[in-house]
Length: 252
Image 1 (cartoon, rainbow, N blue to C red):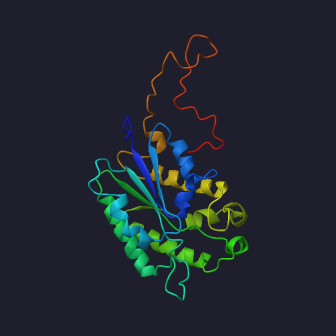
Image 2 (cartoon, rainbow, N blue to C red):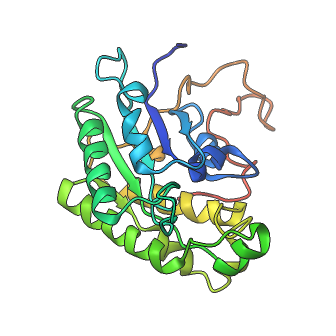
Image 3 (cartoon, rainbow, N blue to C red):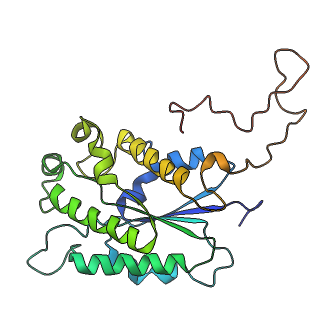
């Protein structure tokens, strides 16, 4: 643990989370946006479903931890929605069991502390043709993703958990099938930008106190200093604590 103390945001989920720091992924973008404001912690496990996540929930988020996260962003659903395998093995989780798993996850996380907030990302769409062309894998459909996405969002309403509808958000873009994925499932940099846009919108609109929206959080060591670069007038210093010129996207 290093100081000073900052809010801690934990990303918890399957490969959509594990790969979120790769190639302009949404986790890396959040880490950039929240630089000097909050620490983004990755707990992603490729291939996992909600049942497997539930088995380790108390290890990943122990209730007796000395510091609890300010926000946990959870994504499970895509693997759960896959068609069942004849052997009975594989990632498929029946819809009622998925809903029950996600409810248990939500209640555990909400019970970590009075100040721990929870956000669920619903299953994003998939490009079935691209999946088959890339890997030859069958059994994951956009229709099933919609069903699990809707179930996730309905549960969020019931439990007062912030829900982000990725299934709808990504498909608002006309060329979503060709731009949002690397393989029909996992997100490209363009797909990740849409995810970040929706997460930041949800954080901005959330009536949480304190607010976890990035522009509402203080910047660490933001005071002006004589060691900052000297401005063009040769007299004042340029405070570099919140410069955004290096970003290709100016986030709201």
